[in-house]
Length: 237
Image (cartoon, rainbow, N blue to C red; front, side):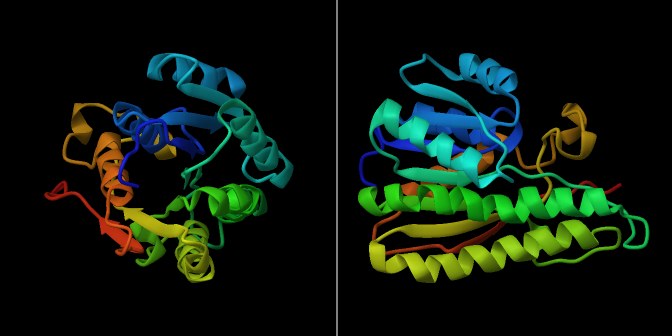
């Protein structure tokens, strides 16, 4: 995408954290951005912070429900007429030993983290075929590195990485680019964290936004399909 001005992006889970940071960067590059969240109130609050109504659209959508994602994409197409970039960012994490994690927690992660990326792609793929667009998933280093008390989260993120790489092969013939970004520690509200000065060593949400812009500005002949990114100097505690 040589010129990002007025291109249209959809970011799931865009009301805070990584999604919000990516939205900031895309808007600064001249794009129009739709953000979704489970709560319309939180999405609208974030949208007001991001920019004017002609450039930002707030949508209520639970990515675990295909119908919600189909409605979200339809709203974007009704407002702007096209969809160029889709960023499947929505996610949730519960961390407990495999013998302690609850059935509810397990299925919430599967339904949001894994089923969600499928629903988002399935709902938007025809629009992306039209625009020869870009689909990006936010996975995690937990998608390649397993750890204690991470069985559920690892399962979903390993799945996201595999899904995205296979989807990349399926969609290349349509000139749709597909990539997955796998961050390490990011300064967000994830897992009940409250970002503060203590998180200065971590990747910042806007850093992921810059990485997304790098992907969008890459020459059409080149596709970085899987990207690992981590803090330069991890906390020594």
